Every structure is written in structure tokens, then in C-alpha cells.
Image 1 (cartoon, rainbow over the protein chains, first blue to last red):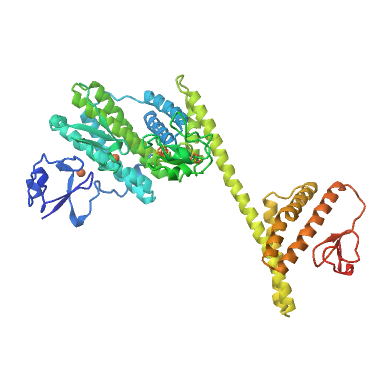
Image 2: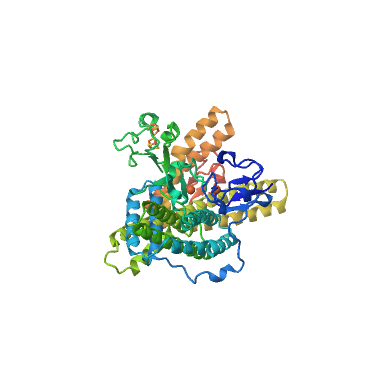
Length: 224
Length: 333
Ligand code: SF4
Ligand code: SF4
Ligand SMILES: [Fe+2]
Ligand SMILES: [Fe+2]
């Protein structure tokens, strides 16, 4: 009997024990698990699971060796990045209870938001191809660089973002395969801390990716 | 450091109101009055049963360095994530079904959070850091757009400049503290080795005596240099003033309780050495004061030092008025 691990949240499906709560009896081999199965913890689809040899999660993205080649020459920020940079500093000021400084950063964030370059008629498909690029090359390279510098903070941010990206890809895959109905009767939550998107009946107790308490997850409403 | 209250956790009715010595916790806004809060007293923090109060530092240490390559690598992703954010919000706007809108919106929010986190780790962690200051400066320089919120940016720059300057000052004054501590240590070592050298001489260990003297002189060299670098050597008039202050403090405030304590403990040798020093310091203070008043006086003055108690006289006395030793023992300067 084998085990399969969710690449988003680390949940392990054990063929020996199955998932009786979801009507999958003990002893059900992975191939027989219905394709509609989603991770009981984080909601990722069956495709996000990897076979789990030696009880250890495979890295979701394999590491490339000569990835440094594609680092840019210098550091520059787009307007959209500056907006995110300043909105994050505003959050930092709020943590310090400095609302005056937070407001100043928010003003800058709003300005750069307006200045951000628009994208020509995007759709879910083009969004997915941007995401696919991150998952197939960007994360691997960034992980290599951060690991080389022993930058644990950067590795942490990359790990969370990679998992969140996998989750988004899994959602976009459902859209693509015409299962747009998957949101029906479900609620959508976004983790304020890591960005994880949870689709389900109720808010999880903790975020499956960053483990922050559920009160830090914001419900995304649906306009009528 | 001052106390702040997490309004969401506070039950608004209890212990911090009783324990705060200044009434800072009792305000109509529900927040603690930072002006009234004593720096770092934390009585309310420890008393609060809801863990609703914490202390917020006024200053933060400099940020950890992030390597340039890590910044670049994270930058590739923050660029990509912000692009996806924009794409998602545009999809949201154009989408026809409420569910597609909802999903697109969630993806937009998610990408913003990821981008923020990546940029934070790319060297923009602390809102007050020198890195942010540098970035703001370069933006102000290059921004030409009319609607750029220049006033907000300027205000931030002013604030960050002030914070960063005071941070620098703090680190500098830390070194001054260290210099003075080293000065005290070296000065003490000098006297200690001189005492050891005398002892070695008495016991006939002349080489050891010599080594102790040389080492004592070495510590003097260190001590003098530390003191000089710390900027504590002024003009002679300033130095005389510092002498008066030091001696006065010793004979008025430092020694009297020492003498009392030694008497209470019945330690006669200590009573004696403290008393001699106390009385001698008083004389020294007077002599420094006199020297200040007559600094421009060219006429040569001689000083005579009592080798037993450290008293200094300008005329050799029959016997020392402090310790009674014969005037013949006095050393001329
Ligand atoms: S830290 Fe002390 S002074 Fe400040 S609010 Fe709390 S109890 Fe009052
Ligand atoms: S002690 Fe804590 S819970 Fe009680 S009023 Fe003060 S802050 Fe609120
Ligand atoms: Fe999962
Ligand atoms: Fe999270």
C-alpha cells in the first residue's frame, strides 16, 4: 500500500486507511480514488498529489542547476510592484500602531496601483500561462538562489507562494475543464497572510499553508 | 517603548485601569495614551488577563542584509505575481458570471499578498529602514508625474531620515560607552599591577616586580588612549572643572555612606582608608577650584603630597593634618 501527499498542504492519503469520511474505504488504491477527490485539508484536486516515497514530500518543483544564468542585471521595480511594496509597508506600520505612517504608505500604494500597466484582455487561460511559468521555472531558480544564500526568510516566502500558486493552478484547471460549477454552494476564502485560496463550506480552522488561525482568512463575496 | 492595546482582545473593564501609575490606560478612545505612558513600565502588559496589551518599540534595529541575488530572484516572482494580480482583476471586471468574478477576485487578492510577502523578503521588511529611505529618495528624484503624491513621499522621507539619524547616533553612543568602560577597566588594571609590583618587590621577586610595572604602564597607555578617543579631554579650564566635580562627588556623596557602612561592619582598615580619601578629596576639590580661579597666574606654585593619606598641601606642614604623618615625608611637586 502506498501513500500520496498533497503538494499544497502536506496532507497524506494512505491507501491502507483510505478516507472513510469521504466514502473512500480503507484499502482503496490511488488509481481507484475518484478524480473528483479533493484534499480534505486544503481542497487541492487529486492532480496535486504526489506519490510519497520515504515519507518525505517531493519538492513540488524540481531544482534546476544553472538557473543563475537568467537573473536580471539589476534590481528594478515596476509600478505594480511598488504598489505591493508600499501596501505591505503600510501593513507593517499598522502592526506598529502607527496609522499616520500607514496612511502615507497607502497613498503611495494607491498611486502606483493606478500607474500599473494594464494587460491586454486577459482571460483565465492567459493567467494560467503566467502562473505556469512561475511553477516551471521561476520558483526553482529563486529557491536555488535563496538556498545558496541560506536566506531562510526568502525560502519561507517562496515555499508559501509556491504552494498558493499550485492551489491557484488547481482552481484554474477546474475552470478549464468546464467544472466552473465547482464554486456552486461553496464559499471562497483568501488567507490574509499567505494568499492561500480556500474553496469550501466553511472557513478552515487554520490556513493549510501558513497555519495562521482562520480569523485571518477573508471571505470573498459573490456579487449577485 | 510604549504600551498599545489590541482593541479586539480587550474587554475594556479591568486590570490595566487599576495598575497604570499614570492613568495612560484610561482613555475615551480605547487606546493607551502614548504621551502619558512611561517608557517600558509594562505593568499593564503583565496584568492584562486577555493578553491584549503589548509594548511597541520606538526604534528598531537595522534590517538584516538581503543578498543582491536573492533580491533579483524574488523580483522575478514579485513582477510575475503583480502581473497576475492585474490580470485577475481585469478578468474580474470583464467576467460575466458572478462565480467567475468571485474566483478572479480571490486570485487577484491572493497574488497581491504573495507579491507583498516576496517584496518584504527582498529587503523591504521594516517600514522605517534605510533601504526604504533610499527607495523613496530615488522615486522622488525620478517621478515627474503631476499626480505623484509628493507631499506624502516627502513626509515619509523626513520621518525616515530622522529615525535613521537617531539610530546612527545610538550606535555611536554605544561605542562611547564602550570606550569609557574600557577606560575604567584599564585604569583599574594599572593600579592593580602597581600594587602587585610593590608586593613583588617586598618579597624580593624583582623580575616579577619589573613585569608588573611594565604591564601597569601598558595599561596606562591603553587607558589614556581610550579616554582621549572617547572625547573626554577638554581644555584645561574644562578639565579643572571636571576635577572639582569628580572630587566633590566623592567627598560629599560617595565616601560618607562608605565610611558609615564600614563603621557598622567594624572594618577599621576600611574606615581608615575611606576617611583619608574622603578628607583628601575635599582638599583636592578646593585646590582645583583655586587653580581654576588663578589659571592665568604665572608665578610658580609647589605642591606637597602626603604619601600616606593622599593629602596635598602648598606649604609643608609640621605633620599631616589628615593622617598625622611627619611633614618630612611629604613629596614635592
Ligand atoms: S506601560 Fe506602564 S505607564 Fe504605560 S500604560 Fe502600561 S502601566 Fe501605564
Ligand atoms: S487589562 Fe487588558 S482586557 Fe482589561 S481593560 Fe486593560 S487591556 Fe482590556
Ligand atoms: Fe492539501
Ligand atoms: Fe495562510
